Length: 182
Image (tube, rainbow, N blue to C red):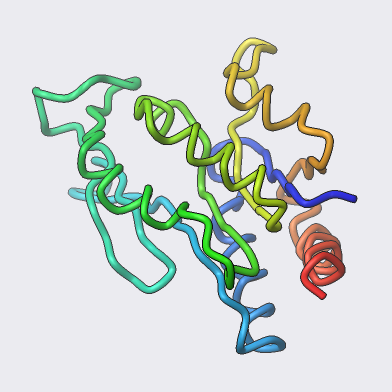
């Protein structure tokens, strides 16, 4: 039975928005659900994206990456603040008895620069608690090794999001999640 729901799609297709809408619906129909995890959000400046931040489900934020730093490792044109990411995201991935669902947006190159991140994701998978996560599309037909490992997990179901299937996908993923949360 699937417990790992992976949403993939091109950048900007609406993966984060889709998960946020699913969570809103879940919370309104099940207000006592205990959900842990985080989102990543664009930081804009001067009309362009200048970085990313991590946002917990209760609204706390920390920098993830910026074009303005020179001290951190690079992914594309962004410099990744691993320590900041770990300080906020890793506590959200600690498995607790009363947690009903985990949300991880996303399991991508920036997040995987943290040597502690993927082991925390694997502990969530091993807990048998439902997990919904976003993953990047393969570059040049090749997945990141950690993403490939998630996709090949026996409990994984992969949803490929496009602009034309977003609404139908929300209903489909919501139905799958509700069936696993009962």
